[in-house]
Length: 477
Image 1 (cartoon, rainbow, N blue to C red):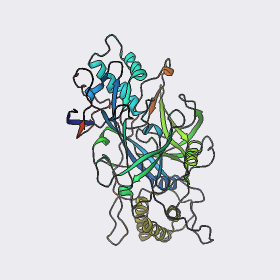
Image 2: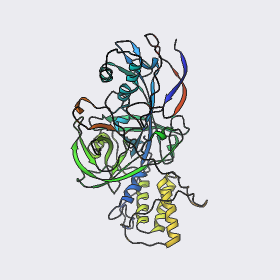
Image 3: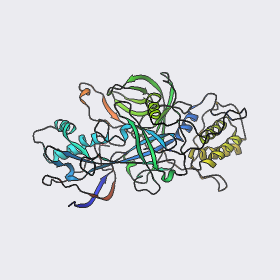
Image 4: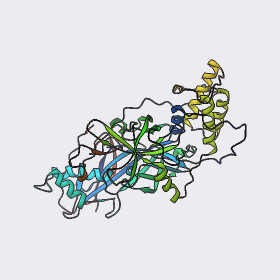
């Protein structure tokens, strides 16, 4: 008979997704049709387009670890539970792209099961002297080669639940009312391209929010091209349920086109800052077209090198084999037209286009914010059309509009600085000062007790004699 008791879930390292339902694209091309984008798009345009299309993902894991040779389930038969946060972006109706390592349940460097084995499971083995005479490195190697990771039923896959939020984002999605859930559709593993496609199954709060779509840029951008990397950076504090999260937009350039040191697949090295939690987010050009998917970083002697997976190659193939059409909706087009008018000083025209956008999608945060700023600019200086290459503008204020205005703006505090966490070196790293890192959550080398959530979980009976519970893991952050 299974015993039950209250088990504390360690919310350790944090991760993101979402998706959309779009409206039909109206005919485009009439001579009086407003331009879709400025003649020379700026970082302001690119960031406003891309930020409107990203989703915040939290992925809950429950992983049981078994040594089949000893017949022992680690942690006294209880699962190792954690939540990781990532970022996703909409590519089509109810379809979102993120990084594969955020959702993989198989044991591979950079995935949650891998880090549980080399982290708390190894600690448990050491604390209980399961392998006398073996060093930590030897125990880790044994774990990676012989231990099994399972779900609640023997021989099943580890438990993975995907939750998504859009626009007004607060952490701790699991258990929140109105939270959207998602399932994995298809993925390219971390060592082959690191991209995944997920589908929104329970719209939850997204039922009335057809998330704006980002297009994949065709071909390979030139080295030196200006880019923006977008995502929700993670931090230890973000593990607290109900904390407001805001995205980070980091500018940079494509530094090189190279090959990943693990797997041998093509990647773009970028100079933009990528923090943990930004994995899966888009790296875009100034037109808001996706150049790459935020993937991983490598720690060198003096710097951290950041890499994104080429979107045209890996995302394009993923969408093609799953029949996803990567096309803008009518709402997407109208919003971008309004943004272009705003940047050129045509505030009245911008307000009308933002009104149309909000009529179709009331939850469009950026349309709300830019409409408010357009009203303020028109009241202060009037329409001042210059060109569609107007300089960047200040961020829209996070104040509530008058009651007569369309939907209110979303108030979001400044983000905390992103962090980067190193993974243990693999055999290929010997003799090198470079360590692979994966940009998910706020702690990958161990499960840290950043916050506590309580629930009843079934305890799997251990076939061996009971062992003392694993000691709490100290936070490395």
